[in-house]
Length: 369
Image (tube, rainbow, N blue to C red; front, side):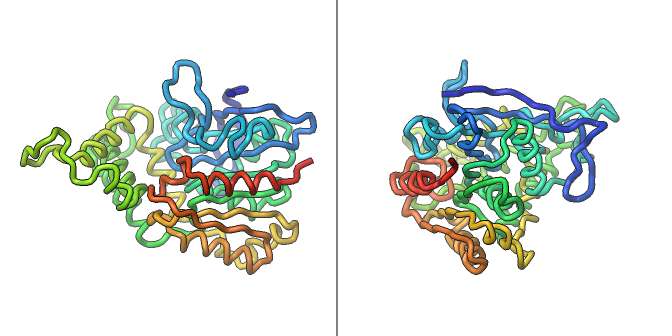
């Protein structure tokens, strides 16, 4: 199913990216993957915005992989995001660590990694880089922009700020403004990373070190928020990892073993600085602070789908209802569905029949010819 993958340089030192805070950055390279056949008139493109720890590998198996892409449950031939109909593109985020320029990249001015000198990133910057990638590909208008969690924030921003570049958006398990509780979770995760002795004020790459303990704890805590109590009870209950209790402070319960595994494996695929920058960008996202944010989207009558899950307490249904309310008040055509699913925030990654049927029906209605 994987049609093509690559890395494209979109901005250079001589022609840098101007970021939303006025800083400039160049060069900027972006890693991407494409699936399905592109229509001759380039009208059938669906852009996938990935979540916090995702990457461009959204679907299918690459050579040497044992696991398919992170959203393989929903992208592919005959699936809700149907690659028999759509040409699907996913690209890494600016600030990422999976092929796109980020704080671990080399600053040409110093010959060393950017570290904490990398410019502050906002959701608008992710979208602007991906807009530039679409222009590089010669794609003038997208059939849909679809994203879950932090990806839904990007889809929402793209629809609100650049509705002339797309025909629809799908915002899944996302938020238009984090609550104090959500900001607090990320603050503790960042504190764990930055207070790790291996952080070295962000210069750990030059010293051949990394804040392993802090990053693994950040991942462990995040995973707790991605699951529901019902889902954790069903998956782990109070089972002991090795049959009987050891009675100590080590890993004794099955849920402890799971979290340890998640924290440990995360170290092999994610950079601590990227975690800092991406989580902070979510904290500042608040597009409806502008009372006229949805004006252009309403004027062009760009349809939106908003989906939430009843067991998701990280971005509960109240977050989605706020998005729906703001869009409805601006007279944007919006469809909303709360899905009953026991797996918490991670439900958007899984194969729930009602969820998949909702996305399929929405995209089947997209007119792009």
